[in-house]
Length: 67
Length: 143
Image (cartoon, each protein chain N blue to C red):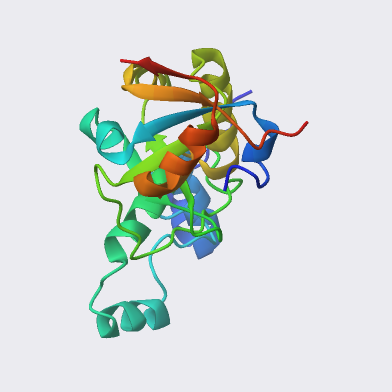
């Protein structure tokens, strides 16, 4: 997955457990044709972004990164 | 300039015109020429399939309704049914870091297109990620 578009274009990737996202009240919806694609959705812009930024996460280098 | 007309004009106008009038009056329940409810055929299919995916479809429709004022401009999202994520086994992968400014812009862009604030991500199994992380020279944890 990381070696495919669009993630391959990012030199860093953020990883968050699905349960962590749900625990802060955000929704995970399976959207689009790609079976691995989801949307994190919320109703209030600032509140939703704030909750997502506060999620426990890990940032890793993308070993497959290409410009 | 504000234009007004007697109520009787609206009552005698065709259904499409009445729909517009209701929308201007603050109700988006039935905009002219646009139905948010499933067609009879869709409803029958949902009954036959045990309504398994109905909750997901409802999310998509509700999201569309909350995009007030642009209801005729938003695209319907394709929401897949039956994809269940495990809290600890599935990991959400987002390109880049969690930069509030970037996330805000992406969520707003999603809202303009689909009528719902959303951040696009990918999901894979935690076991699959172990291979990435072993190839990755560094990682940073953040709470």
